[in-house]
Image (tube, rainbow, N blue to C red):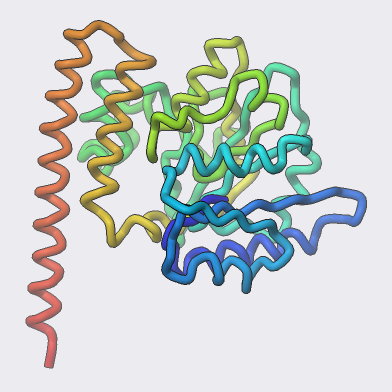
Length: 293
């Protein structure tokens, strides 16, 4: 688990993990590593208070999500199974027990559970590999919000709680379950991604080596999304688009012309997104002031 100023969500996630840990029989060896990315706001102490049984690594600076994950992975590389878990993800009490019963065919590089928000709404945590149209037909697009069953989205948004376990292109790193040996075969997360898109990149490399990735809705977790980025909406939006450009340049089309075109398109999208978020915040602030006594 990588933390960075996660607030109360970190406590909730670690409390849930503690309950899940208590359900595991004594014959199973468990290790937990929390890597704090220089939060300096009490998050590290919160981790100590709520998971004294876990190893805490406090980094002197914010190295980014992928790099911090790799730090944690190195700490548990002698284990059989590694779970990357966001600090705003809440696991059910039987989560770790169920992981111990999973079958792992030699060609499966990773699994991802169904991810539900606190209101019970399914997140699109299983997807097709990004393409040029993903920018307008992705999981946060207008079409996905108003008509998620559209055939135009069928190859991009693959999460379905009723579909059963199935192969997909990639699953979200919010809860990524990987046999430890796969981090040796596929390699660590690409630290060129400060945050976002490192999960898609890793799954893309796994597919290139002949491995598959499984979406398994029999496993479920709750995602309190955005708890660590809500107050840094501008920085995280910019980081998202920078990482999207890196993914395009590394994995999609590598010509200078296509990279330049993608850079322009993503820059425009980033500006529009920032403008939209700023307007939303301004409207919320104005409405809050009007309702004040």
